[in-house]
Amino acid sequence: MGGDRCAPRIGLLSQRSMFCFFTLASLLFIISWLSILRSTGRPNFLDSPLLTNSKFLGVFDNGVRNRSNDNVPRKTILVKCGNNKDRLKVYMYDLPPVFHFALLGWKGDGKSVWPDLRTEVPHYPGGLNSQHSIEYYLTLDLLSSEFASNLDGRSAIRVRNSSEADVIFVPFFSCISYNRFSRLNPHQKGTNNNLLQQKLVKYVTAQEEWKKSGGRDHIILAHHPNSLLDARNQLWPSMFILSDFGRYPPNIANVEKDIIAPYKHVIKSYVNDTSDFDSRPTLLFFQGAIYRKDGGIIRQEIYYLLKEEKDVHFSFGTVQKDGIGTATNGMHSSKFCLNIAGDTPSSNRLFDAIASHCVPVIISNEIELPYEDVLDYSEFCIFVRNSDAVKENFLINLVRSISRDEWTRMWTRLQEIEHLFEYQYPSQKGDAVQMIWQAVARKVPAIRLKVHRSNRYSRFQSPAEKHWISFPLPRNFP
Image (cartoon, rainbow, N blue to C red; front, side, top):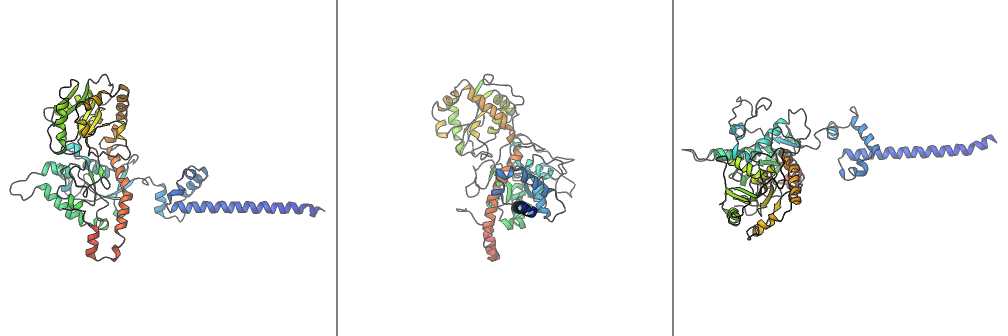
């Protein structure tokens, strides 16, 4: 009797044990499967909110990350827990100083290629030279990333092995080379700027990194519209960092492969701005060269339309005779600041206006703007088509129609985003230097696609054919 009563209980216990065993085995299988997928870097499913927010998976994942004695490859562990996971990895050529800091007068010790920034930071010249000083700040940022104790806020770091890099940085100070060394000295066949460009092309195109990618993953700075005039047609597969595309044919530079970077503003930032709509007496401000060529002809047309308006300041101005101080005071006391196309579509006037919290009025059909893929300029700028701007009374009526509340919203937004356009050393989180690196990082997948596609048949080409594939000429190449 007793044995018969226990039999059902034993059967029930066996069923429950089998169920628990099956459930546990299934759970372990799922966890193992998820772990394998994570290690292979497949993001589509594993990065979904369901999994990334799972407490259980988080606990398991932390357990895997904290194991240091398992057989997981070291590189995988670094990818999972290293601080550099999301940072752009940049390999920088050790170009001789004549291409960079020696152009600023840095002498060095004759042995080191780079200054030791912990003891000496070479000075970049001020005035209008500084508006194209992007090359200086990006190079400083890479150099300092190697000894910085805290990498928080950094978007890029320097790596010493090019095979680990996302991009290759060419540290040629092309803008200062143009500004200071473009005059032809007696008994010279070419300027020092021309000679440097020739040497640069010879050096860069001889590097294995260039040959491997055809230059597609190289970053070259030519922020001044006239910089790199001789070398750009030979280095065009690279990613150029420019102020605009005004003096480039679209087959040499375009928004698909290149980066537009802000000018460094030359007027003083409006610190502790307590102004408001009523305390800025000037409605519309412009000070600069009025008579320009090419697309800048529109400046003089607008000047004649506005010169009689009492609350509009539209005058000729230069950096001489305290021109920067006058412009600073004028922009700080104006509601709106005109940014009109000149010889090229852009100018530093836009970034002077942003630093002044003076709402920019942009009249330049061909202008390209920095990091516009992540920043909506319509929140703090007014855009006017060239054809509308030259209509009688159109521009002045448009500006007068903007209400106090609408202006205040844009003025507030200018103060929120102004740091995105600030160049400084040391660089800070979210400033112009970090924003440019982030813009470069967003181009990396497209660069890799081009490089991989170019490698499809490279194993089966003769050396001459490989060279042709690496350096294809653009359409309509002159």
